Image (tube, rainbow, N blue to C red; front, side):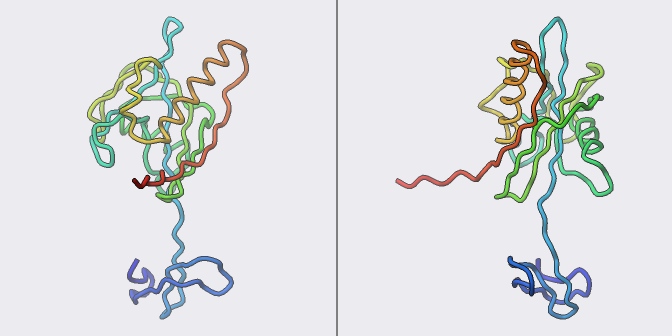
Length: 191
């Protein structure tokens, strides 16, 4: 940030009084510009038929990770709830109509200033199609998922937890859990 959005004067990065971290501060008008993590909201759309469960994935048509597979998700907009964001993103990216269930995963991604939330969902029909941000959309059983071509660690963690919960529920009963994890930036290895 270079200029104050209140008065257009240059801002300085400094620790304001009674704070504990650097913020962009306008020394002209005194406005402190807080920057907070962005919310990425999505769904795990499921279709069950003849006892087989498949999950709908989207192949990305945009960067980052163009051509890789992901769950339908994206940035939450102002003036919408997390459930509204999940419904909207699923329709925008996959053209899919869903019924939302409980929150399934919450993943902190501090190195990119994001929090990712994924809701379990049931596809209402098979009338889906790739949206503008997707090259294609496809249903996958667990053994068919292109694991090496998953776009983001948050999606991989969510899918693995989903299928593990599903297997446990089928074997022992019970319910889906809420899965939380911190995804840290991998450290570079040196030779």
